[in-house]
Image (cartoon, rainbow, N blue to C red; front, side, top):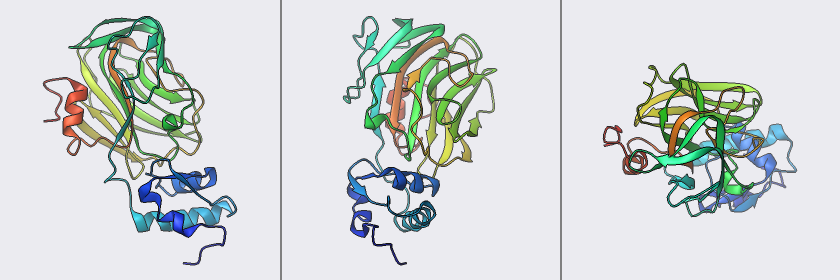
Length: 281
């Protein structure tokens, strides 16, 4: 395959060491269904027309494969340990502190939780690169106790670009919106109110959706990766894209770059869930 002169071929092969893609490259690779790499150096596709960049990206993805072997990276972790008032520390070590509004810290299941009444949220601060979900696999979720059958657990973005983990009529859903196109995966059964569950939503290394309830996975459609940074910050419990805010308790709120697989990452999921029946044994 002949590469255009502006395509920096050696940098293609540096991706295993962690590249940071230019915006045209990120968009092309995301459309091709492959951008599993962490930030690093620049691959220059900016001088190539998008259609050509997309062809190159597709060929590149077929050569190097996906991100199944990549270790998920924890970038947000609100465990509420020693948190007081509105400032919530980030236990991931990435310093993505959160701001709590309209909620209170209470006793949860073995750990602290936030109690919401439908009108609050816990929002990550800043616009850090690690919180940019464009073109990357991701996993978001929390341990939750619903008191109403409808509500948002975690969300980022608006009705055009972003993702939402939520309940509708008690049924867990994970939805991804790319340019206004919505892809959604849902569990088969509604959750009972006033019981604890561990819920996660993922975009895997091939751009397909996955929802887990207490470690039991439901595979969803191929959505691709986000191609544009969502409006606003990552939040937990707040209303989003026309869906109501959370009523109930949330704890162990996390975001990973990468996919937590129920088998390959069973120990991490078991620790996160903190549930004896998490299904992650």
